[in-house]
Image (cartoon, rainbow, N blue to C red):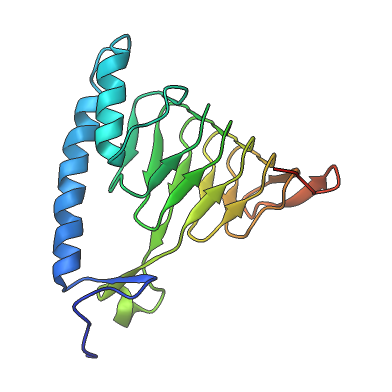
Length: 193
């Protein structure tokens, strides 16, 4: 078995390290927080905002709406833009990082997964891989979409319900289906700002 470093590679987190132990502690803590978030009365907006800010480790814009239940395992990797809407039953595995641009809409039961295990069985219990997910401003993810590590969804793109997104989605593009391939593109693809 190869030696594992005391600190993770930029895109890997080795299991038998002090860093992994710290991450495991954080995950337990965040699971406690999300459990509390998900049972609060829905009309207690101040308490929900405070818990969400504690989960992500910084203030969340007042314009962000997250409907419970909401699940995340780390929290510190989530970056909300303004006017983001996250519907019920979403899961954010955010250790690799999840950036949601302004005006992003996320439909129920969508999963954003920024960490993964290696394919090789001999490596699977040794480390996890990490890669950020970016969802551009004004993008809309339909119900039960799964976005995998390292994917960028372009500004204004639409991902149809049930799609599994394994590759980048250009701006202003509709992708659908289990392999989420491009069906239609509109506009010039150029955006200012």
